[in-house]
Image (cartoon, rainbow, N blue to C red; front, side, top):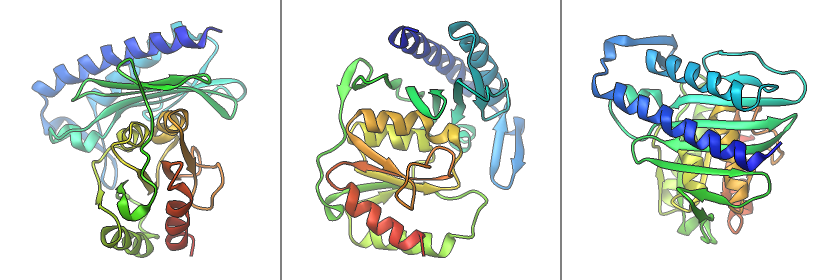
Length: 264
């Protein structure tokens, strides 16, 4: 299996699908939005994008299964699986607000081996494969070199439905507002992670996330020299619904602070 060739094909697919999303946004009406649950929206654009992606991926790696947000395809219980978010940041999209992105990862059993994130509004494609570097539109990227949380810019996301951790989460936000350069919430976890990978953000944390939100992005962060874990410091961040990602220099400090608030 030529993983570099597969990655190149996935990049092309992500860009093509991004073109479809851009075209649909021009005439999109919020009346065509469905609700999957509290604050959890889906549109025909999400569904059609996923169908296009899955159909093409079946031709690229026929033996792989699928873990996709809108349920297209079936999971392979052993071996290769694509993990797909056809439109990460749907709420942004339906309101015409950037960013929103396509996220595609290829997992071999429990190991991600390829990740592609295409941020549609800025035409930026972040990707990596195998043991290679991470790239943005063909140029190598690395995480930032910020050494202290007090000097960092931090990204987070707000939970849509799971409010059990809201009190400690708000306390963690207050801490970072007071003791960092600032806290940002842009509405797309995949893009948050891509921005950590290229050094725009120094770190990111969030809970109530799904595998398709983080699989590609966490891989790209690590390929760009960063570190990733869950709130307890283990590696259960793809399926564990919580994630901490940061550059290597401030990772320990950021993890300790975040865990201190959210693991109580």
